[in-house]
Length: 342
Ligand SMILES: Nc1ncnc2c1ncn2[C@@H]1O[C@H](COP(=O)(O)OP(=O)(O)OP(=O)(O)O)[C@@H](O)[C@H]1O
Image (cartoon, rainbow, N blue to C red):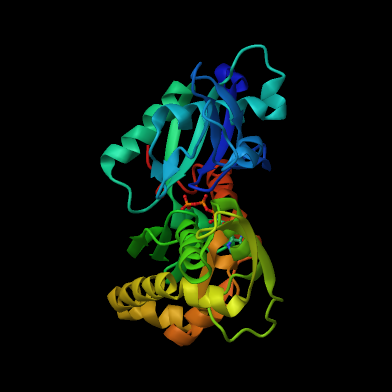
């Protein structure tokens, strides 16, 4: 260990479309929505994370809430840099430091990312005083986080359903053998619900309400073992303009989400059809692992299992699988050097 290593802090980041998570010293120290609120007149950031999330849909003309990532990649560079800087500053042991420390970072990125987008992530990290930067593909990080031995000569299929993208990958011998990244995930499910409420109930609901509906009664199939109760949803009547409340069932939400789930099913089937036969045989025995917040949609595992005729498992704490894997790669840089990109 060199002298300067004492002045370097190691952090692992899952910079997600919906949530940003950071691991420092083996612990998740940040788990926050990827949102910033900016004062339009001064241009200053006035809130980040949970605080900014509470402002969403309730702002006036002087405040703008921004989600700096779209479809898994940085869409607003300035806002994303400022957001990560603020998150890093909030890490307790870094907060105590007199000067901002140099950082060694492992950052996960979607597997469908372009070279230009990769460079943008690296540049942003450099602006944050990162001296060593490693990138890791999200499905790889998710597989490590799930507890799969990715170095084995054995095929494993992992599906990470996040906010912006669903990443499907077959992993063996420390590499991605075939993969597919589709822009169908939790955010689109939320938009589907907003559209359904508008068209079927003449009710205009905001994103926050639609997300609540998805979490409380969202379903990927009408055939659930333990169906949730109906839910009262409030919004604005599109015809009269008055505030209104309607009762919604999980069956309606399953219908609203059907088209998007079909697109995920198609992507899974396509990836399976491209999988080399020896690895397909392994997957037949091990099944499919689901990670990411979107995988918590009721009945999604059952529906994918029915479609593929394979066992499908939702990993423990799916929202944290990717950051867990990123953290493990950071801790064992040498072991995982082949899956990390400089
Ligand atoms: N119980 C739940 N049921 C359904 N969806 C959920 C649930 N909990 C969270 N989600 C959804 O999961 C998504 C966020 O998942 P996650 O944090 O894994 O995504 P992300 O890493 O930010 O996105 P990406 O990987 O696309 O950049 C959101 O769309 C959120 O609404």
